Length: 261
Image (tube, rainbow, N blue to C red; front, side, top):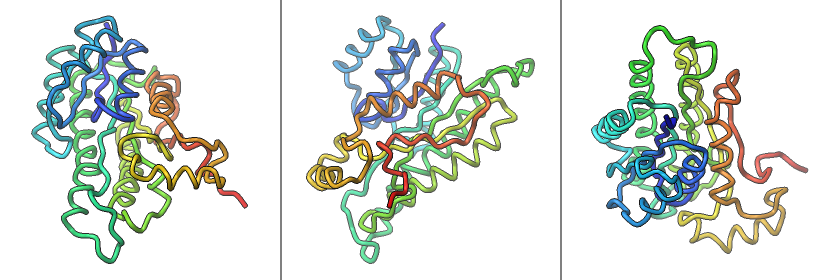
């Protein structure tokens, strides 16, 4: 039986790269996304997995707790198990605004999707895993489930024209620590993957800016990251090969986080 992974926002950008990699590694994957069901893409993913039952799609928002319930129910009803949650879905501010002119509406939107949503989806996922695993499982042998939170270099690097995004990702970092401690006794490990500058539709509007910064030494590995780079980190952590680690941050940023002189 395929292990089951839930990937929010798994239909585009970094999330799609994660979906493709997990399918290639033998997982069944359920996607939660706000767009209409992309029939052609789902057909391609099922062909990629060589299994018509390996991919599911739930239309909904990570910001809505009712959608969390539908999402979890759908996966359990289809496959009877939950193994991995990748909290990937996220948004940037609709407009990059200076801290002194940013609006509460933008703050609430970004925090609702990037932080509040994953926080409570993690809660729901963990409670469902605990209920499914039963009481007789050896919790010391290997993790019974893995949660991977997609953060950003913006969790620690300041951008004063998108403060709400930075705050949301810093919150994700703390949420990772909180759930890592709380869920360790339940046999669930929690990690944070922290990408740097990755080429997606979210970054297309700042291509020239980061081309120049990368050329000027922004990161030791002087190129844009790719969704496949992030997906490789997720696959590594999801595989259960680090059972004595939890709460760890895995940087996928070409070394951008390393202080240099």
